[in-house]
Structures are given as structure tokens and as C-alpha cells.
Image (cartoon, rainbow, N blue to C red; front, side, top):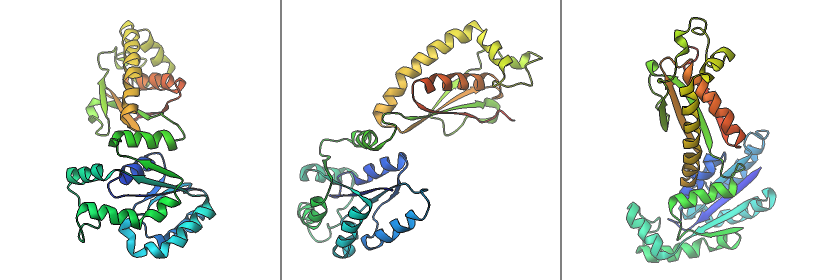
Length: 281
């Protein structure tokens, strides 16, 4: 079982780091009590591999358990070969982030923010001492930190999950789609008697669609457009992209287009899935 213990200074990006891990399949828990952590991992082991990757944020917010939890963290590091990641940043950058987000420092009630950061550094220094990675996020934007996590920990580095969805406009536009493209301008197999009851999955419909000169030009342009666009979404740090293709009923043209694109993207080593929302309606 892969175990990551994430700690660091308040405002250094632990939440962004943890959410990125969650997006690539880690079971993530924020602000977990140290004294309960080892018991929790023992329970995870009993799932038979269903919980294979875990990540936990341990920081000053659980300071009532901090001293009691030191032994626990050392045991976890030894038993699970856990990776300890410590995030830090400059005081000036942290103060700026607190002002921008209007969030209070966990120790702010007892001192000013600069003194609070000094006290926090002292309290968490023992975790920093045993960390495998110490990452200074002073010059990271949120998108850059997220991209760093995806590039470092994702098994499919730089490969965004692409969901291609066919749908029928008569049943409504899918709300989960990041992008929607209308393919109702293509020749409609519905108006061909022998194709009406078939779908875009059938060889007859595929042959009909591929014989359309408009489709041939459109698909070439569409593929070039998406091949250009998708890496830009990846660069921005998106972990998945849902593209909807709509025709009137969602059975012929949109289904065919989605399947043709899925084949193309699979050859490019993208993690792609084809979803036909309305094909059985």
C-alpha cells in the first residue's frame, strides 16, 4: 500500500496538493488525528487491496495530538515505507496568501501572523526533519503545484482522462460536459429506411457516414483542433475533460463521431472512454 504523509506550513499549498492526489486515485484525508492514523491504515490493509494508495495531511491543526503522535509517524514510516512530503514557503508569500484568501492562521489567536508562522515552524520542525521531500512552493501558482503533483505521482504522467459523450438534443445537453459540439449538420441515417433502427455502432451506419464528403472534411479538422487543444488543458492541470457530441436523437451521428474519435485518441495513448448517453432511448 502506497502511503503519503503530507505536512508543512499553513498556506503552503497542502490542500491543493491533496486534491491533486485525490484526482489520480489516492484515498485522501485532511487533518487526520495522528494517534488514530496507524489503526486506520491497519483497517485499510484488510480491504484486500481496494485501498491501494492513501494520503494524509498532518499539521498544526491537530496540535493536541502532536507530541503523542510522533512515535506513530515514525512507526508508519518504517512499517509502510511511507513517503513524507513537507511543503514550505517564504513568510512574505504566506502572509500574502493569507491576505488574499482572508483566512486566519491556526495560531493567529495568540500572536500576529509573522509570529504565528515562526511558532508553527518550530512546532512542525520534527516532521520536516524526517521528510523525504521538502518542497518550497513560494514560486508555484495553484495550477503549477497541481501539475507538479500530477507529473510526479500519476502513473499515466501527462495523460488526462478524456470522456467522449454522445447525446441527443431532444433529451437535453449533458450538464457535465466541459465542451459541447453539434454534429446535426452531418447527413442523418435516420432518414434512410434500412438504417433508421440501427445505431452509430453498426457497420452499415459507419459505412454510410464515412461516405459523406462533409464528414471527411469535418473529422480531419475536428481531430486537428482537439489534438491542438487537449495538451493545453493538460498544461492547465485538468485531470479529466468531458466533450459532448450532440445530434437530434443521440443514436446515429453523435455515436459514430464519438467512436471514431475514441479510436484515434487511444492510438495516442490517452486515457479515453466513450459514453453513449441516449443510444437506447
